[in-house]
Length: 192
Image (cartoon, rainbow, N blue to C red; front, side):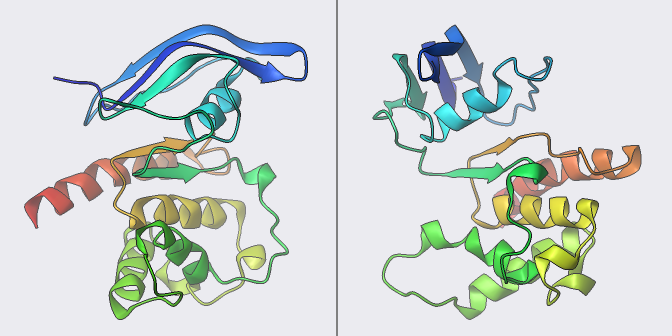
C-alpha cells in the first residue's frame, strides 16, 4: 500500500533556530497516528509544515504520491488547530465555522449551497452539538468549540485530518468519541 502522506528528511524552524531536523514520517490510508512529545518539541511545527504554513529549510513533503511545492497544503486535508490559537471574538456562528471547511471544494460560487448546509448540520449532529449551531463561537464551552473545529475539518470530506491537541478541552469519554468520529466518517462516505 502506498502512503497517503510522506515527509522526507524535513528540517524547518523559525529565524535561525531549527525546530525539526531530518524528520521522516509515513502515514497510510485508514491509519490513526499520534505525535507525542513535550511542549516545544515541534509537533505543531510539523503539522504547520505539512499544511504549507511553515516553509521547510530542507526535505520534501509528498501527498498521494505527488511532491508538494514548499508552502503548499495538500489538496484534501482537514485541520483542527489548537484552541489557544483561535480568535474566539470573531463574529461567526458554530455552523458558519463548520461550513468554512467546504470552501476549498467551492470553485466559483461565493455562497454556501443547500448541500453544504446539510453537510454542516449533519456533522454538528455527529459531534453532538447541533443544538448550538446558531450560537456565536465565542459563547461556546472549550469542548464545544473543539467539536465545531473537528466538524469543520471533516465536512470537506478530506483524505487526511491533522489535529493539533484536539482533545485538550475534553474529558476522557469525549476524547474517545471525537477521535473516532473521523473513522466513522470515512466508513460512511465509502458506503455512499
